[in-house]
Length: 407
Image (cartoon, rainbow, N blue to C red; front, side):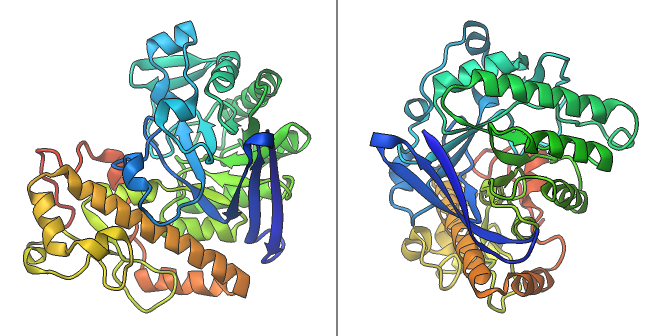
């Protein structure tokens, strides 16, 4: 297996770019993904609310999937090292580029503490101590195309983000764990988390250490506990020192406004967790990169939707909008029917995919900076806060606990 990444168009030095990410599996064929793009977000290896039979009828999505190891770290697996090949375990398309990360990008509040030799992971079975050797063994058994090395992520609040020894220790541990991961992983390409939090000095030390390692195939920006502005500052600081010929993935940056800002900063990949977060609120996405609309979503919980027989979003060509109407979705939500979130996920992923296609077209025209500024001005601040809502909610729209975001 061989990973290749080619930058095909560069907007400006240190700015947005188009590229092609390719995995060559020899006799098994190859898979190509145009960037900027997204990795399909999963839980326990499957896209939320979508069984493979439904996903097969959707418009073409990127052939790239994100899976987090913490979903599979039950006690038996971590102690006895029992893992099943990932695609077989979760029914992932054999052609997809599969990235195995340790952590779920939607979870920003964590309690697990790392030690000198292990990463603390808050799994469903409790706190797990994941060593680089155990991670490498899991990667070799699960068989992803890309593995994100374990890292000593800093979840503490400021001022520890910029003062004291905590950040320096995080950078040193993560670099050591990266070396151990590179030595232990036999097939997958290894992406390295860029560390340093808000410390300029430590970000530079981390970036230079990663740039000096030939075995690193790509970079991960996973400062999910920081504010959007701080995350973008940190990304720009580090990317200036990293190999520009390698792909960059930013975790937890899938909200449309944040994804635009990340891409403008030189990021190639995000995840699709935002589409899931919108579905979990009972909303239908209506945002577009171009156009004149100002409503980012349609709230299908609203009482007036019960008599609205129009498509979820006028002009949308997704399966849900072609075959169903707002009144039906309102009924499904109020009745707590599982089909509500299935149809909403179909629509919201279609909208998310179209958004990235428009982003690539805008990049090709050389107008992304202008289009992004108009997009953010049109929808305003606070229009895309569904990931924050998801982080604190305790139920789905189809459970017995009724939640109305607009109430």
